[in-house]
Image (tube, rainbow, N blue to C red; front, side):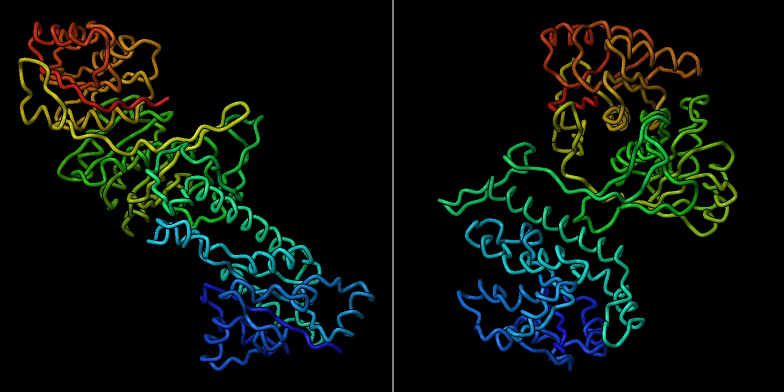
Length: 529
């Protein structure tokens, strides 16, 4: 009977020793490439080199080492086909029952100095590795493709259960198929990253100078895996799922309690995360969102006071909202959260007493998240294609803007303007935010005309009896007419920040001067469609 082999060739050595010891104990002979063999041999794990087994030395500086009929016949032979097995025996070729392989780290090299040189990056393109795991994945009914150290422990468990003559016989076909799918998905992502890189490289000049601008690559995209099924999508008649990249190292968040996130919950959580991340370096801050728009936001000396003030901004809208904080939530804040109904609470951390208090609200979704996480690109689907852009994660300091009015803002007004300007970037266009004393008084969101958004925000201030004397306002884009400035000033707003660029900018500035308010123009705008 032919001796069975396990082929091991890895760049990621994590978890490798326990797996290889289990393979040896199960009677496998380990075939290893030179670098992997050195690591295993130094740990006292016996291996047979690929060169010794095939009789072919590595050539072309290692570009050819596993591309040999004895390797690929061992991987591709159909174990249920007597003719295939007879050919292996007559050729003295071992059946390779498991391929433990991960690829040259092309993706990791994109953030190294090698990335500046297409010539160096060419050497990070794996040929033998993809060929081997593709063969193993094709033949998954008889061969186990193993490319992820996270799967090693499961396979070691099956090895301990299997019969001596068939060491991997206890691995269910469903597990084999899942590991095969993982291979093809990983290869698709690997090839996509190579294509993306070289579509932006100047091979003739050996240069790669990406500015990171979305859309500059001729090839782009991502291979996704379903990380979580959803009961339905935006509405009950729509199917939906939560997907992440197959190359993702894991989510930047962790749900600590509560019902599973729905499609709409994911959107709400993401909107809250983006807004509170913008305040990650600010004083204690609490924000409240409804339907992806901020209805409450405030800073204070302590988080509990920030939450109290955030609720005061729009006392009737915060019910059933999404709450987010830029500091660890302590017990006193958790008690304040529990006073009202909320859907989701987001924070960088939750103290143990806070978790105990929030646990009383069994359906409340509590999410711990890393506020330093940033996605470089955003992708949205449209009919027949995708739109890709850089994330709008940089909001300019208001103090770097240009004061265009005769009156200059005070330091207190500038602080409030910065607060309103940050919140405004998270409000659906057309967007207007009104703030005072580090507290959002109202926002006008998603109106078809900018003056409509101003009127909505002012109406909400009136309903909730906010004193607008000395308040400030921010607009996500320029004012097409002076009417917005006039309405804000009439209500008591003393200072406004907005992007420049309207044909009637001079009329807007003249209105500000006539009404005695301070006006700052910025170079950046923050449409949010």
